[in-house]
Length: 177
Image (cartoon, rainbow, N blue to C red; front, top):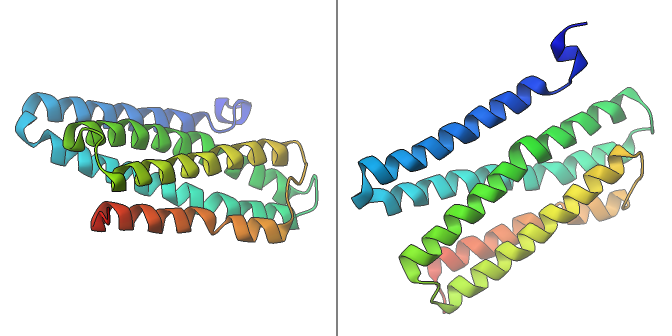
């Protein structure tokens, strides 16, 4: 039996670890080689991480809808378990952590954590993180062949990250207060 068969997803984990290492190396290189432009580079990397996190937050509930429609123990159900787990652990978790880390740096360095719009944005990101945690619990429940919510509920929950994203983008761009 090959190593890939013995440990499903081992190659995906290695690629994810390599991508995170490259990302961290880029951040270090920015501070070393371009300290005067570090803020803009960090902001760009923050946006990249947020886009990756959002892609997962928008896609995972859609996978839950498909999973809810599949029969327990079916090949489709088992495939969806793997897809959900890899999406959550290999893409969403690292992207969320990088988004938070870089975002807090930007809030501190750029604004000194001052501004009503910034506090509202952080509150919306906390809600986004709560959705992330809830989706993680649901992923583990689906992994145990449980159905933690109805298909209709997942269709509704699929929209929550998009609404939070809209609020966050408006707060960041418009800075209404």
